[in-house]
Image (cartoon, rainbow, N blue to C red; front, top):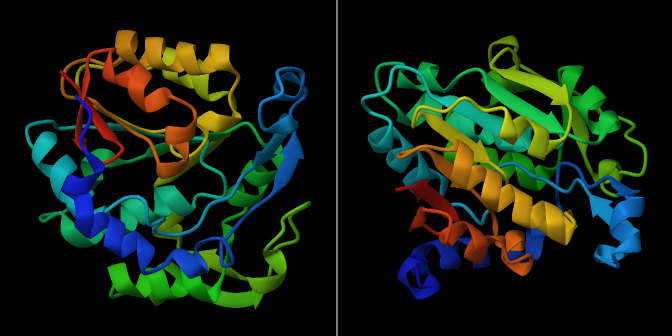
Length: 266
């Protein structure tokens, strides 16, 4: 069952307070083309690996409380970040989990398996540095008391080919502790999703990417998630995904929406 967006007014107000900054101040927005999408006239073949820290279409504090309670009786939670871009989303989740979940409960969620089809952005992420804008830093400060423990050694921005926003960013070293919690991989999100061996102990981040998929792949994603994920596991989408139809498809594959863009297998 889908949630009426009006029931999540606080989350919308929070997003709106950052709307002016949202597109102008990202950590990464690399552009490239996919010939399959071009043939299908979807997004004219254009793909952007746009991401930023603590993206505002997810109420991070509420989400951490939700996953903590949902997986309270699980010793290990498989966490996948499909279409991970530069790692901003994985790092956002980890920082929130480390600072909000008591008794080092965040450890059950690591390592995060982070996957992206864009080889250049994966190579960048594997180097252990990340481009951050001033807006990224401000958002990290909202959610974390220890920003300088996670990101330090400010230098000029990483030179990422076709990244539209690298000139307004600086690069920062990612702490060894944080970096070692994420396993960055080059690959296809559908392939990784289909190989998950789930026992009701998985979180799948697949956020703000589905409009770049072909129609067939959108159907395949919903079908695969419905078959692979067991009761209690979760899949997380984003605001951009509502344009692809995936939120309605996933709703009829045995999932309930437990907060905006977050679905749990029932």
